[in-house]
Amino acid sequence: MAADFDLFKVSEEHDLLREAVRSLCEEKILPFAADVDEHSRFPQEALDALVSSDLAAVHVAEQYGGQGADALATCIVIEEVARVCASSSLIPAVNKLGSMPVILSGSEELKQKYLTPLAAGSGMFSYCLSEPDAGSDAAGMKTRADRDGDDYVLNGVKRWITNAGVSEYYTVMAVTDPTARSKGISAFVVEKGDEGVTFGAPEKKLGIKGSPTREVYFDNVRIPADRMIGAEGTGFATAMRTLDHTRVTIAAQALGIAQGALDYASNYVKERKQFGKPIADFQGIQFMLADMAMKLTAARQLTYTAAAKSERGDSDLTYFGAAAKCFASDVAMEVTTDAVQLLGGYGYTKDYPLERMMRDAKITQIYEGTNQVQRVVMARQVLAGGLS
Ligand code: CAA
Image (cartoon, rainbow, N blue to C red; front, side, top):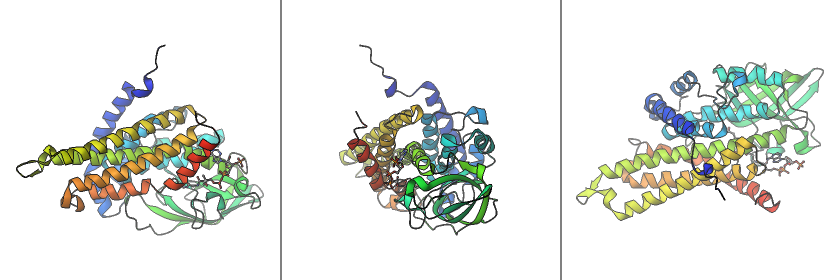
């Protein structure tokens, strides 16, 4: 019986992509990462570098002017950007999150209208699901979209919206039938310039400080009915299907943050001398590095398996997307915390990048569904017998 070992190696094209993205990131994004964090400012240098290399929304299909990158290639781009600057990695990651509802369920007109500028780098996308009182319980949202002639009129508040204010386009999930819970939710594209759209003050966060997180307010925002994504009442399923794919990209972000921390710490321990020799010579240090690398490589295997499932649209993607995001984000938290430990007091200061990486890692356990919600999602698929 001939075994198919393709699962266990990444293609040469993917390896070449990683090499190219890594050198771009080291040259154009890394130099600004500390400043972006220190001043909680949007990484414009990263956006410019990613747009000019066609990497800001690599997932968009070629027919809309995009690169047509597969799910694994998109993960590799996000992973490499996150390795040097987690805030910047939210540019390609949230462009995929925001546009995925259009890709999965949108009409051809919507795809032409919105994916084309996204691919060209002239407009970013954000994703508006959460609300002040609807986080884990996403179907408990209150934002309304009421039909009025040929239009819908939106009213409500969305919270924790990544890249809000910077993005031109927003996929917004809103209630069209309040009696039907998740079946009464529909998805829409709203533009930043639509009358009645405004933004709250940027949240003051622990990490990913360069990626603005703001509330988005909809005050009688009137949009044409053809901005609805898919049929009325299908918005919640579209939002969940989107997350199945994009939890994989958050796993990739977590891998990148962890890899950046491991790379930095393993170089440091070879230079740092105590008791007359590099601390890398001590077995206590070696065991820590071995555990960090072991967890990271296991997380990468799971993430790339999930990426393959995302690309193929396998029926167990819901489980694998949740598992990859949950596992890789826990690994990122552990690896970055251990990396700070390996640098001792230096790791705890802003003179070194590790405390930033540790702060940035934390959000990957929270957004696109807390790791507790991921376990709910995984358990449901296990109990439904959807895994073999
Ligand atoms: N694919 C397709 N349909 C799905 C689905 C999926 N993955 N998951 C659920 N659905 C459908 C269900 O089939 C169901 O329809 P039926 O009744 O016809 O079967 C309907 O949607 C409702 O599903 P549930 O009964 O499972 O819904 P629930 O209310 O129990 O919620 C939940 C389930 C898993 C907890 C969900 O609410 C959830 O994932 N919560 C977390 C939300 C989240 O991840 N938020 C992150 C926001 S994005 C973010 O962080 C952004 C950022 O800016 C980076």
